[in-house]
Length: 566
Ligand SMILES: Cc1ncc(C[n+]2csc(CCOP(=O)(O)OP(=O)(O)O)c2C)c(N)n1
Ligand SMILES: [Mg+2]
Image (cartoon, rainbow, N blue to C red; front, side, top):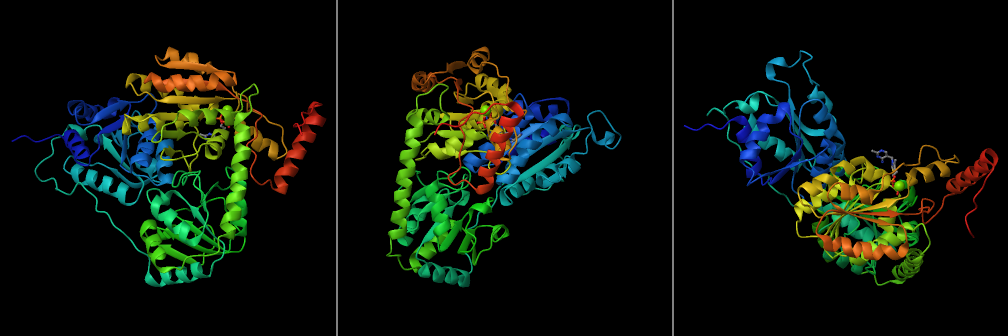
């Protein structure tokens, strides 16, 4: 009778779970996993990445985009170590990822063998499930449990597989378990809903702070906002939950935020936090009544004092509240917020039209906006580039992903690879700074290899500009912030893609228009102004004081000063 090897069984189970691709770099300790993957390539595709970190970041991005588990693999030792950054991105953004790593042969473990690293200990902090496979018979049940745990606990499962095990046959004594995970719908306690209802009925100026947990409930959220006459402020991971230009939307909060959002949050008499554990609590009001809705009770009241916690599904909870609260007839506060927001948009539009050289980063986002289709995927890297995208790009139905909580540089390109694999027919953009792109740019050739027609936009200011401003606001002089870059357009061509180098504003839109028609991997290398400051909507005294100190240092230590134009 045919008995599969443990490697074959592993691949069979991945397919049963609906996994259709896996990112990785083959090598010694996983060759016995790669061989069954080769045999099953019509059902599960192996995407060979050039750096395991890009593979893990892509797996995390795939999970963020689709809700399905992202899978990556790496050899023992160095390959496994390279996965860590992407796995932490998945952990911090709470998405399911499975990492399969090799390990030295079972009978060599613990002998300081070649490439032996204590992987269970190394992955201990990042993983919600972390097991070394001990036998071929153990493997099937553990694979099922690993994937189930990653889904149920929204995190990373790691299976460390000693080199010999995938080659053994799985005997009939192996336990048979289920390859699926059950779903649930959760409503908060009745008495908590009742208390929330009372607070809402008494509120005159309610404001909604909507986070990642509000994706997919757009109509409910807007219906609720309308009934409560409550403007909606979005966290960065919440961007796209409602269209940015919707009359109820006041844009983002914090350093990336808008004046309207900042003021609304300061003036509100009832803050309703939905699906967010907003970390920048300095931007939240000091004393105001607060309701927090989150599917996970662990998040409620964690960072900010709340009066009522509603532990439940955001959509179901809002539906209950909508049916039970009375409408807020007073729309004055909402209308005042809307007016401030209109002014804010006009201010941003003016910034987007400036035609100086070097090009203003805001103008690049405007060009992107003009070519991006309604269902495009936008993978945004970390840096000032994040601020420009968060503020200037008006989402309608696009999907945007970023490394929200780890904020790791280099997430942009891997996210775009995953986006194009998940949605072969959609436009997919990576929007990166030169610092961020530089961290994972070697995997641009992966897009070329697998014919993934992503468009990478590099806002090239020859600087890690966000850090320059951080240093200056602290009162220091920038140091270690200049970047020596290649010509990224020529790099694209050298990799077999298409490159555009843009140095003047009038070349910008034509480059974008051509790039999206190529259906080939492209890089648009835009030389942008490094001195364009991502000014927050409100400037604190400490920031202003710090900046003044920086200016004085430049004057006294370097004898020069560039005052910003009035
Ligand atoms: C892996 C990693 N290293 C360092 C940082 C700190 N960091 C945050 S933003 C940034 C600069 C980003 O520069 P760039 O990509 O050129 O974008 P810009 O700010 O110039 O638009 C750095 C170094 C980080 N977030 N992640
Ligand atoms: Mg830069």
